[in-house]
Length: 176
Ligand code: AMP
Image 1 (tube, protein in one colour):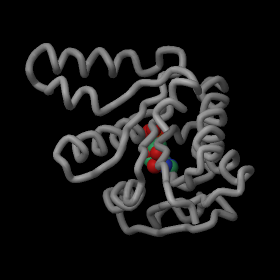
Image 2: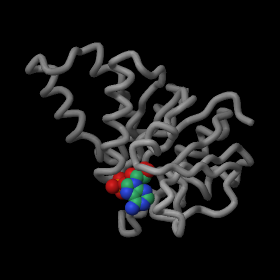
Image 3: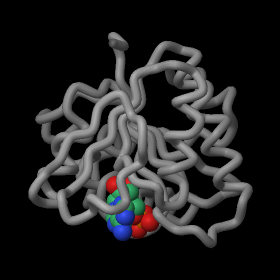
Image 4: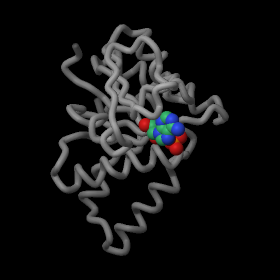
């Protein structure tokens, strides 16, 4: 069992640009080589399968957390599969015990997971570093929104700083 775990939030889509899945492979590989076990949504859908495929190659602990209603989508062969009753419980168990939360490019599910994690860290309910991997500027609109919140005093600069936006594997590794 890995001493450190990283949770990955990512796209469930099959039709995204392949560059996002290549970036996912590179980032997951870096996390594995730095000794992290990998937690994800654990389904065969989209980037989630890419995350599991890459993590399995490195022999690290691969943990998937799924709601029971997704049982037909479970990624096979993970070290551990945890079933939940709801999506909320899934999010809670995904981040539990993780010292790093990584959002790869994703849609509203990924955004929901990322923002919920940021809120909990801001409120001191969770001790976890947060990185949104900014592949080809994918997260520039979110960065701009957070900066707008700071400019309008909706968000403290110190809380804005809780989330990093690495755009390369090297920048990501500097956070590990
Ligand atoms: P999205 O970013 O909208 O593609 O949603 C994917 C993210 O949200 C993953 O990190 C999952 O944990 C969760 N999720 C939301 N909807 C689904 C789905 N239909 N299948 C698998 N995971 C999903």
